[in-house]
Each structure stands twice: as structure tokens, then as C-alpha cells.
Length: 455
Image 1 (spheres, rainbow, N blue to C red):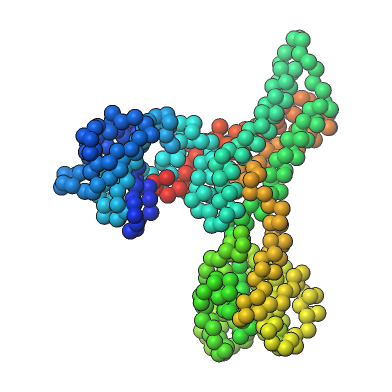
Image 2: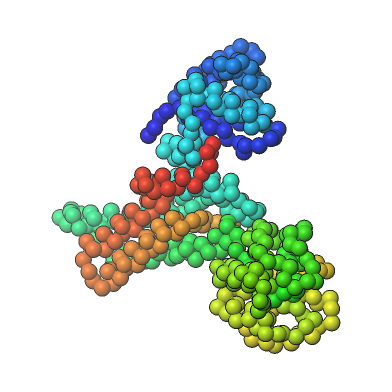
């Protein structure tokens, strides 16, 4: 492991009340001593861990800013190394100048995610907990933040570790029975082994079953708002956004491009795209907008198809319906504040969910939230339970399930215990890679490449 002392700005670059530069490594205190003078004239290297001191930061050009220095001594720090955090006023110029002074006095700039990577390599976090740190930073809602914090506390690691431990126990018994037949080792009971493997497979399968709902909570839902012109798509976009995000006008074809926004509907995050009205047009610009609308519709995880309840369905409406076939979609019959003309029967034949609302009057958002929750299986989502957070973890759990399933099939078909043991050991390897106990350098590097510099 690289033991160089590293430094980085740990707060977002921008004007704020406070900015933090973090230093970590064997020489962190020495670096800090060279650029900080405390008010009591105490050396940073003499301070006890978990203490702070007020002082001023200096570089070769002179006084930089007044600062508060926090000291964390190894191994009781985030990285497991000596750590110093320098808090100054939150100006971009100031924190960059302090960082430059750190590098001039013995530190080097940290790589993306290097602080958390060092925490992993020093045994402060497992790989799933390290990934949860990134998920906490990017959390967009209460549920996603709670799920990430649960993983940061080790819920997934402990669950996978327990399953892995049971598999190790079975593999060890099998290996001993195979390799030392002359010893007085308890005979392998095929029924007990099959039951143990089934239990492990079921627990991992439960984790896999909850993955899609968890991904929706963490990442949000890519959602396209589609419909013919003047059905109220932009008004719906503004209702869900909570402000005037899209231009609303009675003139058909007002929306030519795709207007995007990320909104929160309860605990559900929607990445909304308000698209151009779908209709036949001789205007080349409008035709390009319609083509773009169809592209967004085809890529969306959820389609909100908007229809005007005060008018009968026309050919453009039926085009919208045809584009929605095979998609996860909700038909929204808008303008229920006006006398209703539209016959719902045709929509109910094509859509599993049909809702009536008035985007202009601001009603219907709560019913929409409940239906989206139902469609994506979020009603029973438990953010305090262990869950798989990304495709890397999902792939590891799935590979382990397949290996366990193969071991069970081999056991049932009467294949030698050697083959069964190989499958169990392969499952163990997949789970150890998932938690990082036996992960390749390539996997570790890939995980931490997601992080920002300074974390």
C-alpha cells in the first residue's frame, strides 16, 4: 500500500462558511507543523487525538487565514492513519492555497477516493461499507440515505459474512471427510448438507429479490412525460417540480426540446423529462422534437402518458398509446376540472394504471406517488434491512447462488463429494470478493474510482 502522506480539499469548492483540507499519512503531523502556528504555540505533533486547536495557516508568501486544526491519531481515525483536518473560511482561493501549502511541505495530492481506500486497506471498512460511503454522499432522499447508512453500519457485510461462514463450515467438513477418511471424523450427512445449502441459497436469493426496489430508491426512476400537444405535459412537469420548470402555453408545439428535472415525490426520486408533443408535423424542428420524445420514451423506466380528459382520443393520442406498449407506464387523464368527454375504456384496455387528475389545479400527485410505489414494489421496502447496493454486489451474490445451486444439484445426483466441495468453495470465493476479503486489486480500484477527491 502507498504510505505517502496525502492531502485534499474535503468540502465542495464554492463560497461557504467553512472549508476543510484533510491530510492523512505517517507524516501528517509534520506537514501540519510546517504550515500551522497555534494560538498557544503548541506543535500539532504534540496534540492528543480527538482535540482541536485555533491558529493561523502560513505559506511562503505569508499569512493565509485563521484556522481550526483537528487531530486524529492512528489507528483511531477515518483512514486508520494519522489525520489532520484544517478548517478555514470557506473560500475557494483560501482552501486551494492551504492545499498547495500542504503539498509544498511534504504531502501529495490525494487521488479520487484515496482516503476511503486507505480506510479499507487498513481494515477500518469492508468493501460494502466503503461503497456505502459513496452512496451516502449521493443519496437523494430519506430512504436512500437510510439504506446507505444501514450498509455503512455493516448490515450487508454481516449478513454475507454469516452465510459465507456457514458455507466455510460445510466445505471444511467435506474436505476433512474426503482427505482424511481414516480419521474419526463425523460422517457427512447428505440431508443436512443439502438443507444447509438450501438455506444459504434462499438467504442470498432474498437479497437478490430486493435489489431492483433498492436500486430505484437509491438511483431514482428515469421518467418520460409524453402525450400529444396541449394535453398538459408541461403543467404536470411544473406540478411535480414544484415550480415553473416548463413553459406553458395554449399554442401547440411550445415544447420543442426535452426539459429535464429531478424531483422527489414522497420518498421516490423521479428523473423527469418533459418531451415535445407527439403528433404529425411538417415543421422540421418540431419533427426533431417528436423523434427525441420517442427516444426518451423508449429509454425510460417509467412513462407518464398524458391525455386530455375534456376531449376524445384522436389519432395522435393513439400514436402515444402504441408507443407505450410494452413499457412500464401510467395513463394520466388530465384536466378533470373540466367536463369530461374522454371514454376511459380504450385507455383501460391498454394501460394497467389509469389515473384522473388536474395538473393545473394541483391535484393527483399523491395518487400518482402511490401508484408508482406499487408498480415498482416499494411498498414493502425496508431501508433498515441488508441489501445489495450496486451491480458489482449483485453479480457476486448471483454467482454465489448459481454455485450453491450447482452444489445442491451435484449432491442430489450422487456426484462425488469432491465436486460438491469445489462448487461450495467457488461460492465462498464469490462472497469473499463481494465483501472485499478476497478482492482483486482491479476490483478495489474500480470501486474507489467512483469517489470524489477528498473522500
